[in-house]
Image (cartoon, rainbow, N blue to C red; front, side, top):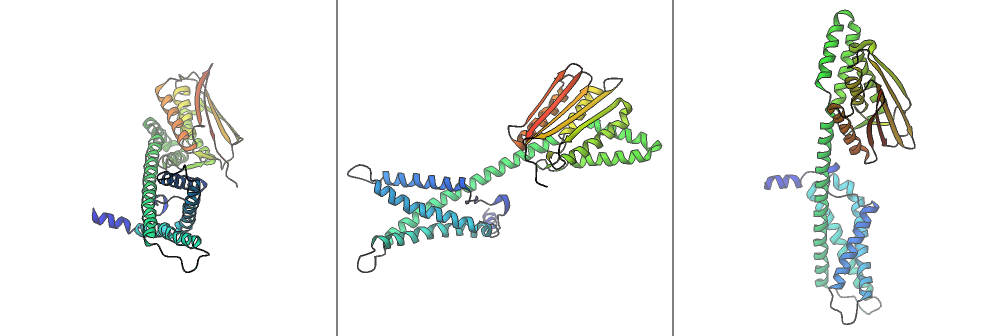
Length: 353
């Protein structure tokens, strides 16, 4: 364990593993200022006073501490990229050196200001330097420990979220694979070109299913995958499957999670069109307005909305969209007469071209 500890200190902690947050952000600066002021307030309240609260002492102590905090944050912000490329032990030592060094420097400057105008050189208060240096050392240790625990907590949450997204994405049903393989086998002897295209479409679907769950692709990629999926089903169902697309209002570069529309199409076929001897049609419409994506899928033939498979697919899509785009994402389904509707909405910004 000792060797592992020293090995950890000797390795750079780049990327998301780096313990020190971005101290240039307004939130981080505000947090540090508030924590420093609370510490000053506690220190002033602990001082014995004869008459009332010493506001002057609070103001002077606040000015002293806030200068140290703000300059420390500015220096560590500038040094952050440099420290990320250095061993962890050196980065921690650099943090201590910056904060403790500034505390000692301002202690000396404060003595010089107070003794300005007096004859001679201001005395060097060694005890005061040690006290301020020790306070800075303890507070830096507490903050570094807090930053480290916060980084570990964020890493664990990110890992749990990624594992959850991966489990939600891995949902291509075995029956679809078996049906696709049977369709390909039937096409090999009579229509080898279609069989080859079906194999390519099937490989694209499984490649997308194995992609990073938290990676958001584009609508153009999802549209291409879904058309390939429908071509595979078309080989099996023939004229029983009719599809109408009305998606000109969705830009190709719009952020869109892979395999989000495909389960809705699979539900429409599996629970809607396939049980009907005469088949049916699927209509897909979508648009992007005011920073919101809206996609509507409807299919003919009655479909029970409480079907376990359909509900599971909708819940998976709802969980993925909520994890990627926040609570504003919505997924709903309903039946209106002879048609079944599935609708998903989520907020996003279209990337500039």
